[in-house]
Length: 199
Image: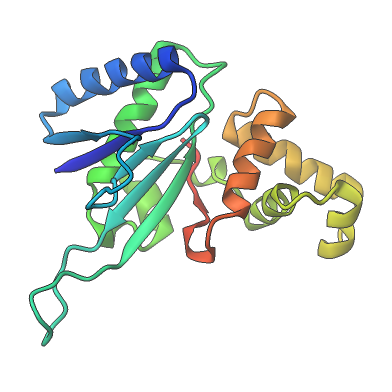
């Protein structure tokens, strides 16, 4: 069963998003449980969390450990997807939701290798953040300016500006504020939870 949590400060946006998710679910015939954001004691972690400008997808390893008790492993892959929908049509948003649901339903082992995961979901490698763009995004999220980042990464300010511009374009950020909100969220995540996937 897929567990979905919607956290959004805008009620109307959350309502519209839930309708689009229901529409996609009716096509896919999936068992889904919507969790309430006010319920603090979630017994299980949600598979998908829709936030204001991003989506977090948790894919759990359901295989059993050999020679141990019957408890499943607690391994998971956490993927964050920029869900900046201000410039997109309903068709494009529905396509993103369909891809997010497909990723959330995928097997853990498919997502271990990024290259094969891109191919499996029909994503282009060039539309994903490069390592340099990801580093610049993390440092911007930590509050560094372009001069500080250029010193830290030993690159020119123009190169840092290019990496920022490319990362912002790939994520679909309409302005610096959207980019910074996403970057600061990712910068505050744990090291193993900083996977960004651009759809």
